[in-house]
Image (tube, rainbow, N blue to C red; front, side, top):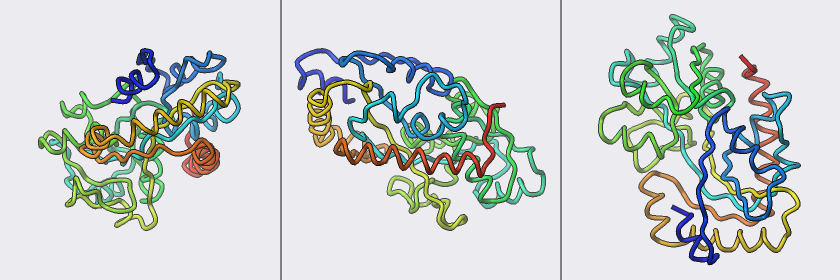
Length: 270
């Protein structure tokens, strides 16, 4: 969505190179020491969670990566398979309290956004769920009814919820989202709960300030375009395009706050 108009703005191709696996570590590792023609699309878990879970991470986000801009804010949606024995968050909590550790949930992998937020939910509700980490998305197994529960970003959850293939149980934002007005926010059952996600762009530490500022300006312009904002809004994603300083401050805050969550929820290597 961003690469094509950014290519036009920069006058050179922007090539998306997907490097999935290891909870984002493989992709993020490719940025360390890279030249100024390489960008990394980051998410909050890469900056805030992984350093607190993996003792020998091959990079340190706050040291090895240079913030460029925050791209988006993204709600997460708690979704259940059509065959799940619970049809609401309240029913999920009640069943989990009666039979601790018997309800499975799939995640994008250890220490990813879906994993840490599910553990936040379980910790807040006083329940125990059984974590099944996937190497990629658990969506296929969720749709097939192989697992009953997952937490998905709105980008993947909304199409399935709208089609009726999955049940949307709750959103992780402080308030309900317009695209799912009948679906409660988790804060309605867990007061104060607010855990949206975000996407951002980083480059390698040492890239010149001129390059960083140019990328920030061009990406922010792309994000302000009506076509991009319209496409994002359809998925309940809001465009941001923050300054370098504001995004850097967000990364430092996320590092501290997610570190506290990891400790409280006892998230560790399995």
